[in-house]
Image 1 (cartoon, helix red, strand yellow):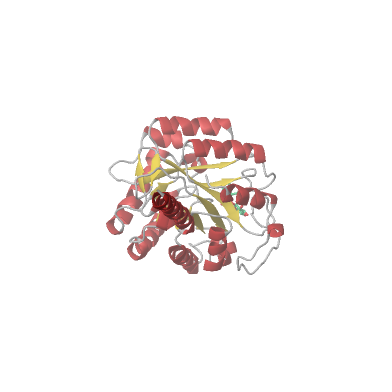
Image 2: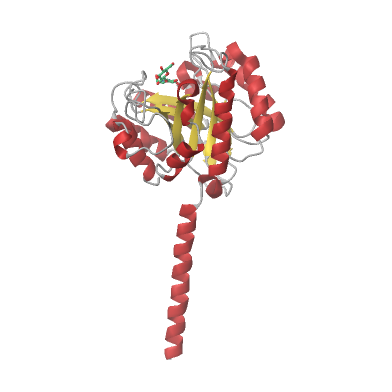
Length: 333
Ligand code: IDC
């Protein structure tokens, strides 16, 4: 009798320890160890085990200005202290960006290699903005993505964002953006058959409903960009997103801010929380704009905090937006 009781206790203890070790090891695994290669099914992003997931993370500011933060120490801080899953490397084209300064490609490579070593997902963002149309530098985009896909396409953590925010009244979905996307996707797929490719939508990546009327066909693992700034965009844009989802369009929020669309004012906490619960409800992945100490309200650091970028920032180095976003990220969804 005594023996049996001891045996029961023994079995219970072993089960309990196994459970705790299991929990600890899931926690200590990196995002890429947990989720592996990603794929899209319907409107959802799935991990390698076929489970619905929501990636959450932080964007760089323009790499021409804040590329010094695209390093392993900073990404490790964001992974371990902020619990990010994904880092976005924003390669502007003009305003001192890649078209004018080819050396910036190295900042993208630094981001990819740091993310690879740290087990983070990384979004390579071709940051179409002032140019309006992605067709303006299509040749450069094709060359750039060929090189990135050929060199890093085998990694499970690479995500392509091929045009940040197309804009302008002539920059239509079916006539301009979709044909651009089809060419770039076809090129990437020659080297990388399966990693996620995210396509920008008209009106600074807000018209996901328009893309949903005429989605890209013939390729798998394609998603569409929705961007919002909580102080400027609210229910109307969420309704648009809902219409797109109802038509089956998979959405990835590769950039959002807690401020006005200018990057200033706020943070608009209540409005941001409304958006965050919407994104959670639909399991939509998101990336917050952005890591900089420029002094703008959407920046996650206070003005002039640690100019060297070693990732040793303290709570008092974070802006109100930074404190809010860090708190959200540290709570597991
Ligand atoms: C802004 C930066 C700002 C910089 C400007 C340059 O916050 O410091 O001077 O770009 O063009 C976007 C863009 C993103 C903008 C951001 C805030 O994708 O590049 O960053 N924003 O205005 N879309 C909506 C807002």
